[in-house]
Length: 105
Image (cartoon, rainbow, N blue to C red; front, side, top):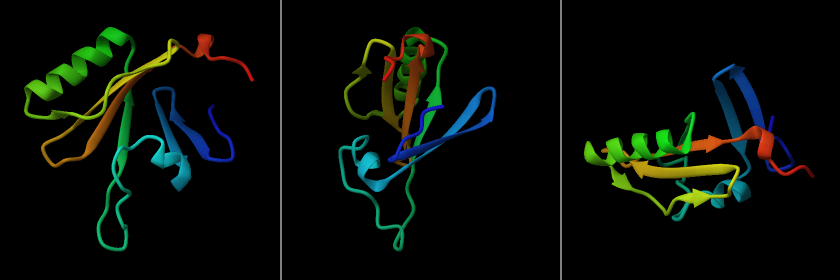
């Protein structure tokens, strides 16, 4: 599980993990400002894919269905992701990660 002073990961089941980020860490993942939650609601949703190919396929299909590209692809070798905005402007990240290749601390 990936947790530190800026984030906490919780495994919901074998296929679902929820991650809570500090405001400082959340800013690393977005290119615009954080929504004032006293005025409105917003989240960054991230789903896992089984491969880089699946990441590309899912994001490409979302864009073809009317979504729009959000940020450049992120390629860290052991982790790869792309993101899109849906028709309601919600951001979805699709990520693939090879846990066996994560650099040890």
